[in-house]
Image 1 (cartoon, helix red, strand yellow):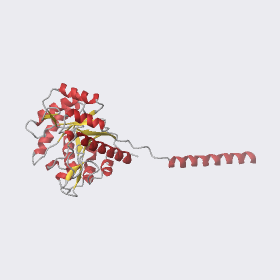
Image 2: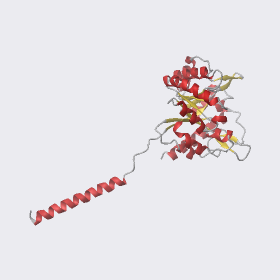
Image 3: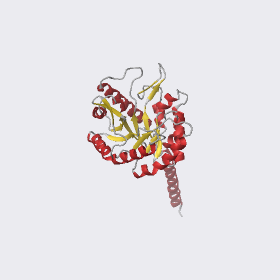
Image 4: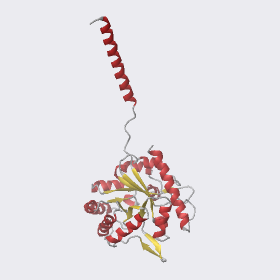
Length: 312
C-alpha cells in the first residue's frame, strides 16, 4: 500500500471511530422512554346534590365541566329521599339510567352498593348490584363497612364468591376505608390480596383515613402500602384547623394531592377520581344548587391542575 493510500485509510478509519463515538454519545444523551401514564377520569358524585333532584344533579355536574359521573345514594324527589337505583331494581332500570346520563354527555364510572359486605343479605345484594352495573356498563361498584373482629373473614369469603360474578359482568368491586378493621388502605389491600381476584380491588379515600383515624395515620404513607391494589379514589380532603375537624373538597384541606396521586400517576391503568365531598371548610352547605355547581367546578379545576403537574 502506498503512503498516500495508507494515510487515506487511517484517516477514514479514524473518522469512522470518531463518528461511532459521536453516535454513542448522542444515544447516551437521549431521554429515557416515557413512563406509561395513568388515565385519570375526574368524576363528580351525585352525592353533594342529595338535597336536590337527581336530574338537577346530573345537569349541574355536566354544566360544571365534568365528563364522568358517579351515582350517589339518594336524592330529594317530591319531598322525600328516593334511591338513585334501588338495590333490588331490575337491571333494565340501571341500563336506562346509564343511558340518561350518557345522553347528557356524562359517562357513569361508579355506583354505590349501599350495603356492607358483612350484612345478613350482603352477598345477595352485592351480586345483584354487579348485574346492575354490568347491564349499565358501569366499571366499578363501591362498597365499604365498619369491620370488627371476625368480619374480615366474612368479607374474604363473600368477596371470593363475588369475584367470578364481577369478572363475568366486566365490573370491579372496590372496597374503601371506613374505620374499624378497614380503617386504612393497607388493611383493605390485605383483604383484597387474600381474596386474590383481579375484579376485587381497593378504592382509596384519603379523607376517611384522616377522619376516622383522627390524623394518626398519614394517608400518603398508607397509600404507598396499597397503591398496587388501588383502582379508584373517592376524592375528599380533611382539615383539622380551624376546628372542629371536618371533611371538605380537594385542595381545601391538609392532604397534598400532588403527593397522593403521584403514587398512581404512571400505572397505565384507568383510575376514576370521584369527588365525594366538595364543600368548603367551616362554611354552610349551599342552599341553592348553583352553589353546589360552583364547588363542583372548583374541585374539577383543582384536580385537572394536579394531574397536569404530576404527569409532565
